[in-house]
Length: 226
Image 1 (cartoon, rainbow, N blue to C red):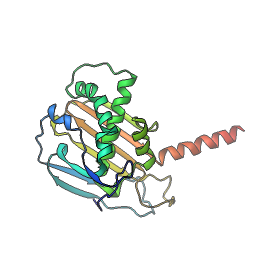
Image 2: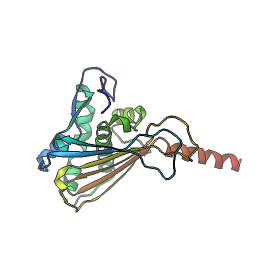
Image 3: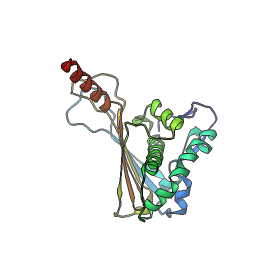
């Protein structure tokens, strides 16, 4: 992590406190068996870009992933709307984590998406050089208790090894339309995060670049139609 955050990343208030990446109630469902967690941050590209890019980093962090905390949110957010998001999803999430059958109506799906969005945002602050999620997305989550509309979140059943490890793989990357595209800086504009909680696997995707291209494409189509 490049530097400490002195203000809440959601509301901007001072007096930040430490916040768990994973909800505390997970420890009652899954045992914590790991003692270290590997964090990887680096570059992914399909051509040799001309923009500046960061080198691959690998960090071994002491302590189980489920107990890791970051000092970047205030007490009001932790005990307020964040707690509401966690509580709304706890019943459905518990069933999925334990591999029990459950029916996910639209309300349950929105509750789960909000929870996984929150965990993803918490996780990406483990490495500030790969931050992607814009302030507008964090504000939307706080104000509406729902994941932003352009986020893509998928769930599946996990049957691999070490399901109790609460493991997370977060990758921040920079997409660009061509090798000559030097708009902006070397900052990441796309993230993909995979979470495993017991028998539940979650994959979350968001991008500030991908949807900009989509909007430009729709605008061009509309101009041609006119």
